[in-house]
Structure formats: C-alpha cells, structure tokens
Length: 271
Image 1 (cartoon, rainbow, N blue to C red):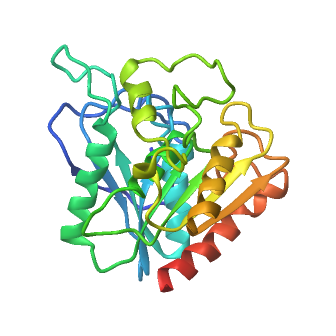
Image 2 (image 1 turned 90 degrees about the vertical axis):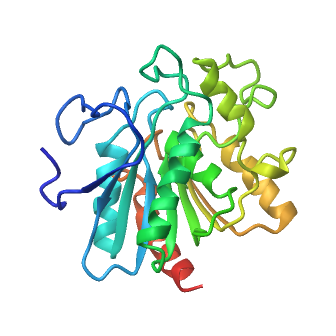
C-alpha cells in the first residue's frame, strides 16, 4: 500500500538485479536490501522543478516512506516532480558472493542523472536528502554533469565528521562495513582539507543543535568552508529538533523548516 495522497510511481530500472522487496507496511516501509537500482518517479501537474530524492538509512537500508515518499508528497504539493533513488548499498551482497564497492550509491545516483537528462532536462533540478541520504545529496553537489542542479536541500546529514581522520566526537569507531567507511572517507562534504568535496551548487541545510546521532559539527564544518570560500549556503539549526525530525516532528521551532526550504527552492529555481 502507498500513501493515498500520492499517485503510483513510475518505476525505472537503472541496473540489473532481482526485484526489490519492501519490509513493513506504509507509512513505515523500508528496504533492508537493494537488489537493483531504481528510480521511483512521482509526477505532479504543472511542475516547475524536479528533485532527485535520497532517503536515509545509514547506507545499510533505505527508509522509504519517512524519508522518501513523504518527502515526495511534500515536493509534489509544492509543484515539484520527485524522483526517489533506490540505490544499492556499499558493502552489501552484490548477489554473486562479492560486496558492492564503496561508490555504488554514487554510481547509481549518476545513472539516475543520466536518465533525467534524457527525459526531464528542461525542469530545474534539486537534490534532496535526509540523514545519510543528505550525505549522498551533498556528494552529488560535488559532481560535474550535463544536468547540473540548482541546489541541494540537506537535513541532519553526516556530511563530513564520519571521516576516519576527522571524526566527531574523536575516537568514534569506524562504520561497518568497510566500504561504507571508505565512502565517508572519500567524500567528506565541505571539509576544508578536501577541495574535491566542496559543493559546486547552493546548499540549504536543516540540523538539530543537540543531535547526538549526527552532531551539528557536520553542518558547522561546511559553514566554515562556505564562509572561507564564498559558497552559497543557507544553514538553519534548531534547538528543539530531535535526530530524524524529517517532516513528521512539528513539536518545536523546526516545524518551520519545510516552509523555509520551500521558499529557498522557489528562489533558486528562478536564479
């Protein structure tokens, strides 16, 4: 079952592999394993922009509804077509007894861009990601492609402080599997020592000040780099927000973040 407020998605297969099987029921479905890359496209009438949506799940699963279809529904309500990327997971079984490489999610995201370039290139594009999906959205801001995004919307994402040489808090153990940690090490988005990981497009950020799962230092490091390098970054940090506030938690000042983001999206689409 899917959100009754959403149309059925158009599903585009981006790689070979067996069918993906959801665990749980709407609105709490997850994908504990991704067998093949797919794009789940939710279209709206009269769209003025489009978004590539990256759900979180710590690169070990995908939180499909809370950070995928609910985001797509919100974007559709704004007049934005939403394409949820179902990407394969670094270090997970590739189906042939070997693990997926560290950059498998990035490869799937670039394949999604290739598809959108051939089908939807006239609409302004945004990358939208929450939690680890926000990290992948951040990684996408560092890439060159014929279809360049107008910006990226990122919330409570582990952008850079999971790098094994720059961890916060210090001494935090590496993340299994090793391919996941390697991906964090390759792409510490906004870290001053890694110029290849600097965003090339504007960024909107929403973070929780007291988040212990994804400390606010992830955002602060990008803010410092943005100030030093004159990057286009809007950052909103909310004192009352819990980790994973997404679009569900409205018990605090962070309830305003979707409206702030919507205004930013409209302004950047016109820039």
